[in-house]
Amino acid sequence: MSPEGDRASTAVDVVVVGGGQAGLAAGYYLRRAGHDFVILDAEAAPGGSWPHYWESLRLFSPAEHSSLPGIPMPVWRRGFPPAGHVVDYLTAYEQRYRLPIHRPVRVTAVSRTGDGRYLVESDRGTWRAGAVVNATGTWRCPFWPRYRGMSRFAGTQVHTVGYRTPEAFAGQRVAVVGGGNSAAQILAEVFTVADTLGATPHPPRLMPDDVDGRVLFDVASARAQALASGRADTDGVAGLGDIVMVPPVKAARDRGVLVPQPMFSSIAADGLVYPDRHEQVDAIIWCTGFRPVLNHLRPLALRRPDRSRPGRAAASGRIPLHHNHVPAEPGLLFLGYGDWTGPASATLIGVGRTARDAVAALGPHLAATAEARTHTENRRK
Image (cartoon, rainbow, N blue to C red; front, side, top):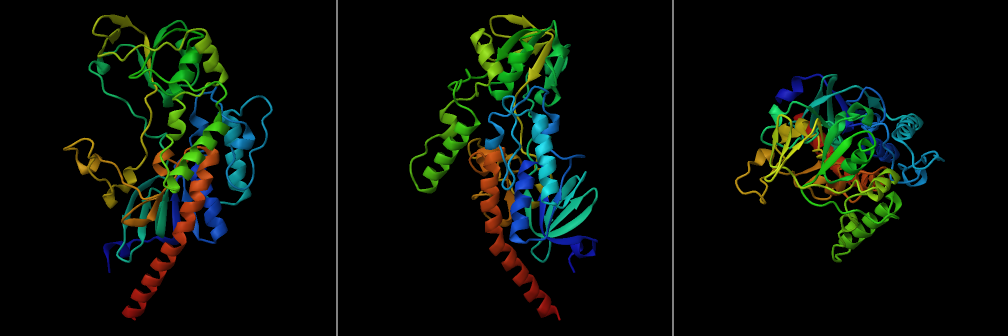
């Protein structure tokens, strides 16, 4: 008997790690396919990362273009829906489909068993499964860049995950670092109460004013179809720009706020150090992105060296995917991580498509795994 055989565990067809929008979309299609599954969510309440965003955040699209498969998001008649409306929708969604969600459950390790299944260990128990859907998102893994002098800065440093309202920075001089949507939106509202400075490694590209989430989804879909048919890459959403011009960002642009400075070379106790000047600031808001939450997958040794950076260790390289799974692990799926796992897969409307295709591909794998396990058990009798 393998060492795993001594551990008490619950057997299911599929374990979904993560109960945000990607995990719920997976659950919808797993339920339709008749699989026995559980969803393990590290959060204490429904909504994935949505309850943690800053208070003014809104979707890029109207509710009717922001739905998961099945039931549509209720209409929001005062502009685009706020994060709280999304939380209410996701809460109702998991209740409507009676999805088997366990929370709060923190998955600590996923490994292979001697019979070809996966062992999923957590702080609330252990599960055996023929397949694992990894839908952990990125919110719990903010990326902090490293700059000389960061530890000596005497002011406030906060990442996007810690930002809530601009009032905390009223009357200060604030540097907002980053060239994406979060940086533009936070800079636009902090500017209303503080003196701001935007710093980006590259000048951000503003999308046309009429581009919203509906356009982004259509463009991402067209790119997916082009790639699937062997046509040239259209660049998709990246070809439109970096920043969606939601109303606060438009207003900031029109007032001349979105004029970024280049990146500084180091940080002093009282501000940012450039080769030719010194900018005093009281606070730095790092809108520098996130990384997928994947530490629990380390026992599977999935990472490969990053060939774009010679000499980089495999342990810190990228996990190669074929569609939504690692080539050597057809029973391990990744959902909801943006273009890495499918065009628009990090959006409410886009994740449903990738979840549908990924779950459909699981059927033959689960059948083959069950057949192999039955054959092995019969040989032991």
